Image (cartoon, rainbow, N blue to C red; front, side, top):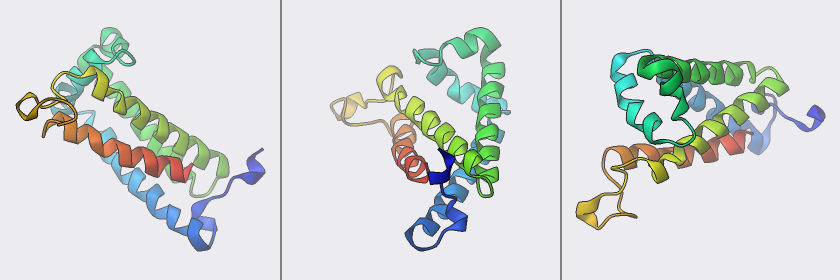
Length: 149
């Protein structure tokens, strides 16, 4: 099964450029993961967690700070899997799959988070400068994760 997997850093040609995606995702997961251990970030993601049918259990179980720490730990584990994935096929697939899942979940916030649509611009598909545009970048990150996978 894993014999068909490839590591971007160990290939040539068009697959070699996928290493750039890996390391960009590593930086993002390390940075965002570490930020989850600050009260600033915990308060920032609280409404996203609270309104999400997928993630609303997290602050209910761990509280807002604990929920942020939980998500940060998952994000740092994703970064670790992506880093190890530069050397190991299984870890590469795991890290890319974790990344895909992360961005698939965050994109559902478009459907559950108040304030994503901008009412002064006519509502959806006009998105707010804050939350809506922040979430829209996850579409590209999902695509990058899927390409790496």
